[in-house]
Length: 378
Ligand code: PMP
Ligand code: GLN
Image (tube, rainbow, N blue to C red; front, top):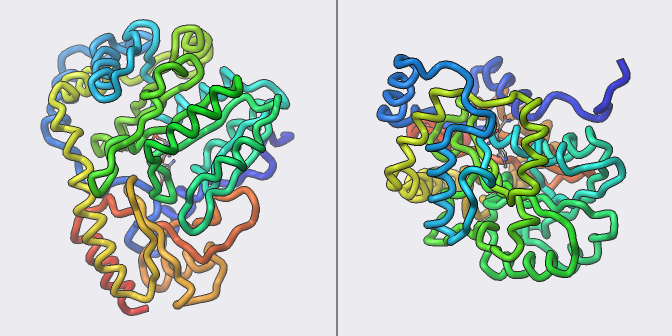
């Protein structure tokens, strides 16, 4: 068949996880925890699936979960999303992102992304005939050049995609950054998709700056989240989108023919579990301890560690160890030192090789220490 995505191959996350399995390596590549979620959440899931909650959920998601999400956003960011018309449960953040793009993008529309960027944005845009306009985050701080953003916005720019906290850079936006986005958006009529799947993973007392705080731009901002990252359940694939009603009506037209609805018992379980806010407000501390443990160990190896302000990733430069291109180095590290990582170049459109690999520290302490032991011998 004639490929719709001729330049796309299997995602790096699948490639590196397979390599980790094949070579019996510790998988610090793909971002998922190797520890289980809270037993209480598992019990809730079992409870609902054992008590008849096994048929289609409403297309928009069950009411209690939608309510919990809009309440949470109101409490944290003073936003006012209507739980009937302005929130939708999706099969992971991925499906929400895909659907935003399918709802909005017409052929030849331009979409600005910041690189290094999560790998699904570009192919989705291209599937609908859109054109990606990449802006490189300034290396090595991975900061946004807002002048460049202003210059790259044209009459064709339909959408800007921002991932905050940022995968893979581990960078988070400040209040000033949010203000800069607000000022620029007000001068244009483009939309913004805020991928906030790492919302509750910010470190060193820094607060997450949700785009939901920009109330006056609510009709042009779409917020996407994921319970996978929030509750260590990446395999459940439950996420959501918040957006103003007129966009949501269009979004739902696409969503209803792309899965229709999402796994029912998990929605009930999550709705109950969300009632206790300590279930997510302690997440930053939990992951900060892991970050510190891992970075502490990694600093004693030959890697040069870059800052991680949020997410569950940290990057490190390996120039003192090797001059291999990063994809070859990641392969070498997996095969020879039994630690799988993600080469940073996988997140760039243009060829870039900063000699950096990304480590995921959402792992048991023992897994992290075992990996450090292997890396010490480099
Ligand atoms: N966006 C980013 C930045 C991610 O890292 C991920 C992976 N968790 C997703 C979206 C997709 O999330 P989900 O697994 O809920 O589809
Ligand atoms: N978000 C995860 C990561 O960045 C991977 C998700 C996936 O494999 N699609 O590693």
